[in-house]
Length: 189
Image (tube, rainbow, N blue to C red):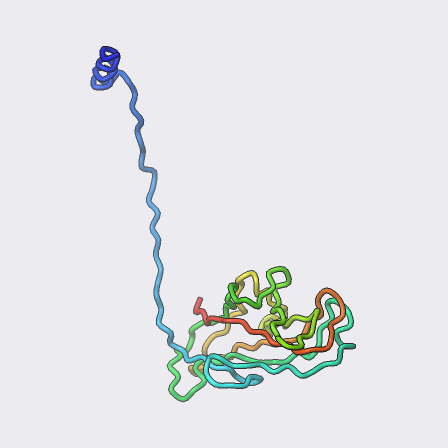
């Protein structure tokens, strides 16, 4: 046994036995950039509150408006403003979009809408759908992580317009309260 190991070692040293070789075929370079927030963010027309946390209040609707799955009602325009306050330093030419946080608890992963989180007497078979007004009011699937349409800052401000509306899911909606929420981030692609 010792003799065989010695012979193998001598043959390997003499180059008669192939040993694995590794070739270097290329290099991967990864680059990035960390940007500071250069634009103030606030709710615009159609919102209630100040700063980047705000509310959109949908008008009450009758159950007849949401009598079947897929029915929509009470579309309410709202916007997110960039650089809207007096101290704005939002540079002209900057492109911006909104990215809704796919880990927000209210996002229904199947429909991409916002589930009703109301407590007490919640309406059933209803969700809230967000529409991108810069994309012909196309419904946003919030579960996919796709950002809104981009806008370009001009005059140190920009407006990102949206709409929120009720949508019946799983059948006719029932009487009750609707309450939901979603986190968002302004991105500068």
